[in-house]
Image 1 (cartoon, rainbow, N blue to C red):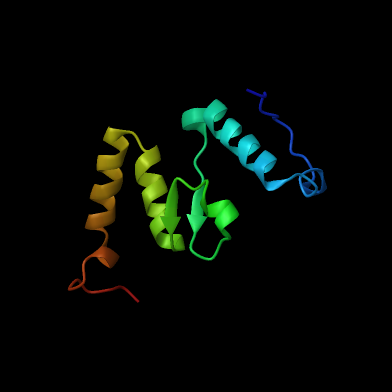
Image 2: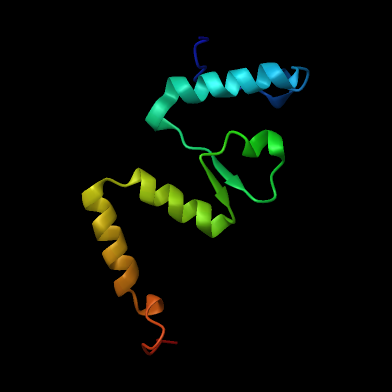
Length: 97
């Protein structure tokens, strides 16, 4: 497995690479980074991006799925409690304007 670079490289370094090589590099990087990386795939992205996504959907869906995965169990419970107790989360509660 190749090592994962910590410095950003210009996109021009990747543009001449064949798709198979790009796929392998991305897969290797995801495997090497493990839990430290999560790829969110939006509906409008190309298949070449989506095939590496851990979550797929519209912006709100991938955001909430990503947040829920990354939060620890105790923090997740607190996050969900706050989300459901928010006045905006309650359809019949009066809204402050």
